[in-house]
Amino acid sequence: MNRFDRITALLIQLQAKRVVKGPELAQRYGVSLRTIYRDLRTLEEAGVPLSGEAGLGYSLAEGYRLPPVMFTREEATALLTAEKLAAQLTDAHTAQLSQTAMDKLRAVLRRPDRDYVETLSSRIRIFGGARRSAAAAPALAFGTQQPLLDAIARQRVVRLEYRAGHQGTPSRRDVEPIGVYFGQHWHVVAFCRLRQEFRDFRLDRIAGLQVLDEAFEPRPDTLQSYWASLAEERQTQVAVVRFGPQVLGQVHEYKHYYGWKQDQAPMPTVGWK
Image (cartoon, rainbow, N blue to C red; front, side, top):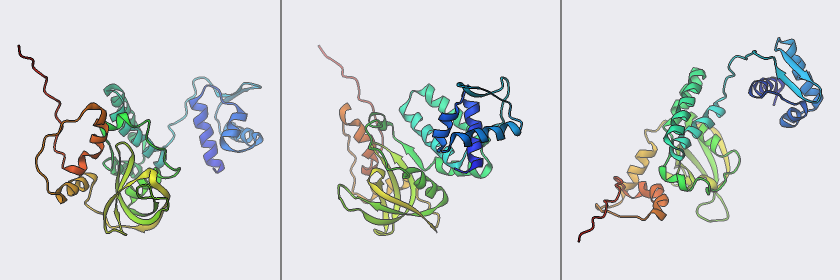
C-alpha cells in the first residue's frame, strides 16, 4: 500500500471509529508506529482537526465530517455479491435494506464504475436452495472470485489450473467466462477453448488462475441461455416429480440442467371418513 492509499485509509478509520490507536493502525497497515504518527501529522497539516490523548488514541473533533470516500471497483463488486446473497439468504426486510444500501453505493460511484457494476449484476446468480448449504460450502482459494468477476466485466480470457471431479492433477484451461452462480458451491460458466464448448467449473476446484491480457469477442450467451441449451440437448418428456425436504437444496442447484419448468407446492392432503 502506498502512502496516499494509507492516509486515505486512515481517514476512513477515523470516520468509522470513535478512537483509533497508533499501534493497531501500524499492525493493520504493516508499517512502523513512527510512520503512522507521521501520517497523522500530515492529516493535521492538511486541516483535519484531530485530537489525541496519550494511551487512548486519536479521534476526529466532535462535529467534523469528512466528504464521502470513493469506493474501488473491487469493493463495489464485493458489495454487489453481498447484495445478491442477502436477497436469497436473509429475510425480506434485510434483503430490502441491503438493496437500498447498494442503491446508495451506486449513486456515489463514478459513471464508468457504475456501468461496470451494472454489467456484472446480471452475471451473478444466487439460488434460493443455497440457504441450506452456504455455511458448508468449501472455502475458495484466495484471489479466485474477484479476478473472475473482473474478467467477466472486461471480457478477458482466463487461464485456469482446474481439477475436474476429484482428480489430483489439474489441467490447464483457457476459458471465456460469462457468469458465476451459487447453489451448493460457487461455479463459473465459461466457454472452454480446450473442449470448444461452454462448461461449468466449480470455483473450489480451481488450483490456479490468471487473467490474460487477451480480450474475447462479446457473446450473447448468458447463464440462462446456457441452462436452456443444456435442456434442449436432451430428449425430454414432461414429468411431475415430488421431492422430500431433505434433498431440496440439491434439487434447486441442479434443476436447470434437466429441463426444469416450474416449482409447485404440494397440495394439502384431504381426509375422508
